[in-house]
Amino acid sequence: MSTAIQSVPVLRVARPTNDLAPLERFYMQGAGFRRLAAFSDHVGFSGTIIGYPGAPWHLELVQEHGEIAPRAQSPEHLLVLYLPDPADWRVAVDRMTAHGYEPVPAHNPYWEVAGTTFEDPDGFRLVFQNRAWDL
Image (cartoon, rainbow, N blue to C red; front, side, top):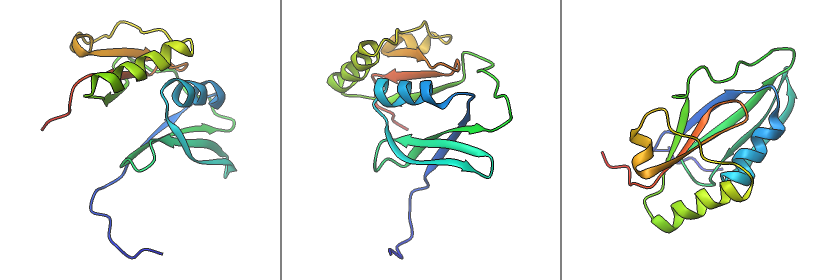
């Protein structure tokens, strides 16, 4: 067991859904995320935690039994992955289309300049941005 203190915070974005299977296909097969963990009927919740191994973030797709999760309320509900290498970006976009997911027009025209946007089965959007994130 490691006693080292983690110096970089880890971000978890939790997203409710009514049907885990189509979202798992979209994010894992289409977007190339990997399953990091999963849980079933844990005090009324089931879910999958996905992302890229070693990345300081992950996405939790969660279904609350007996509750109805709303679809995305705006086309600006999106996740953005910055992929500065053109070859990596092209692989990501091509993998999505090879799995049957077609790009959608971005609501904000900024994302159209160097990115490609896809909409998941719950109406939330994922942008592959072909730029580096520089602060």
